[in-house]
Length: 396
Length: 216
Figure 1 (cartoon, chains in turn red, yellow):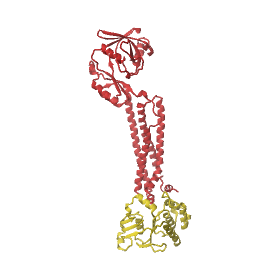
Figure 2 (cartoon, chains in turn green, orange; figure 1 turned 90 degrees about the vertical axis):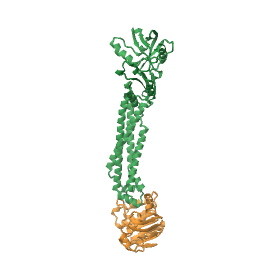
Figure 3 (cartoon, rainbow over the protein chains, first blue to last red; figure 1 turned 30 degrees about the vertical axis):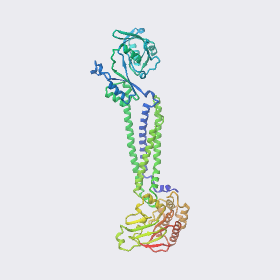
Figure 4 (tube, chains in turn orange, purple; figure 1 turned 90 degrees about the horizontal axis):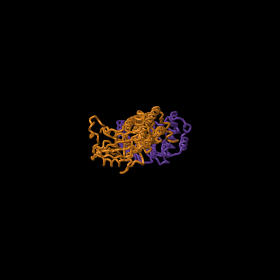
């Protein structure tokens, strides 16, 4: 017969078992809450920065100053000063940035096929900031054909607003690409004519773009001479939903496409909820630990005479501690495994659900959740060990 | 293993003890390894108290009880349990069996307390046979007669290795024949271990070949 089997007949840990079960359930819920909070955090990071969520990986924001009533008629207030540009470039959330070069000459578009002529404007940005990939997107001095990128919004406005309202035909993007409107650029008496060619439609930059080479050449020849300070810039950022970014923009009264930064609000809310859930889990964990300690005290108190006699007969405190811990630990381990399994199940379910929306997270819980499970179990073990040690020591 | 008493006086019995002569109290006494020590003590002179001091489960005395040159107080809990598992065994006057265990389990408890038991289980059965308690081995400790409990407690004490066996009136509830059987077993086991014992009793007896006798 083993020593522990005999001990089992002397010290029944069944006393107050109901409380122990309740504390175990509490521990399970606490672990689940903490693990879910950590896993949601991990998933959120993966959604924002993960390789598989490429569309979310980097984003471009066109930023300009907010035009207020005071600024009207004073264009110098709406441009970025050099020190402001320097400050923006130095922000951690700015991966890359460029000014949007405005034309310093007048532009007129003439679409002969449509009997249509309009004043227009050009701007340009370095090619790396453009979301349209086209082999035709290049221009060299002497070329007559100038590639143009227009915002997709323009075609939509034309097709669904202007054309329908004025009984004009709607054009597909393919058709629009075949048009070659005449371009007349002028400054005072000097003019030059080109053929335009729309090579793509941008969702990112809401302006009429020409290649930087054309812009530089034309500004050189037809510009007013003095370089115009930029009033719009484009920044590349890893995380348009970063709260740092939105705060920075707000502080400096800059504005950008709010559609792209709206995630920062959602993210802030999610973070608060996740933190609250995690905090609640921690509080629950504390209570579970408290109940475990009290349960251990109860068991040891109700068997204090037996424990004293065992010690008198030569049982070592260590032997009794090990025996008592062995009565509780399997329950904790099972609780931990169940909690982790539940999180694994939830993660698998969530990843499936998100995948349908083209958002990819791992099907398995992250290493952080696993580490947290281990850490909580170690903590529970340590607290129990200390409680058993303390209360046994009281009787030796 | 040497046990030394140095000017030991129990605090609660102080007045009474200092009024009369004693070979033990308030003296320097050394028990040498392997000695069979008899301490004869009239009622009320602190017999049980002395055994408890020697086994270090009571501490209300002045003076020192030293084991191997070190006072009991300098041993920590783990060292104490190691000594109680391997060097000092005890038969209490009040026997101290677990009522919730059977007689055999009470014996086994002490045998398997050490990871490597000193004796196999058969030895427990053999000793029970020698003392005539085989028939009660499966009974709960609570249902045994005092004499049966006393013999079970003696067998329990013999299940472990020891250098000293402390016994507090171990035969008080046994008839002569059973007391002699128990004494023979104890003597055999002490000789086998080259161990000594300290036995307290009310009267003189010739059951053992005592090395030394004291009057408490």
